[in-house]
Image (cartoon, rainbow, N blue to C red; front, side):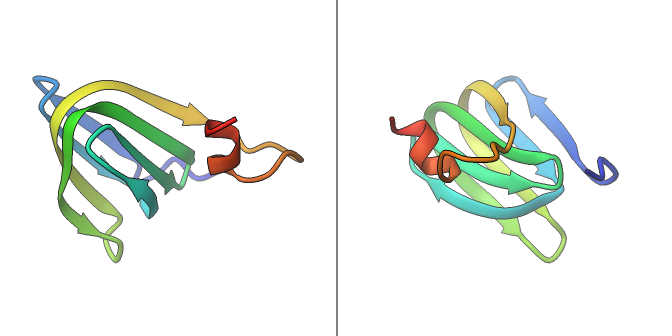
Length: 87
């Protein structure tokens, strides 16, 4: 995987800026699930909302209280990312 262009900046747990975003798979006020050039990234928190999304540039800006950032490694079998999260 190509790590160039993938950066995460978290300011005061209330502003998150991510580059290298390929797709936002789902989002609500508690969880944002996205594909990046380094794999799936899950952002969890409270009152999360997407301020800016530019898939052309691969940039995402999120506001709200960020509680965790987790990368999910792809699995050979067992379904997609969402099926693994909601087992």
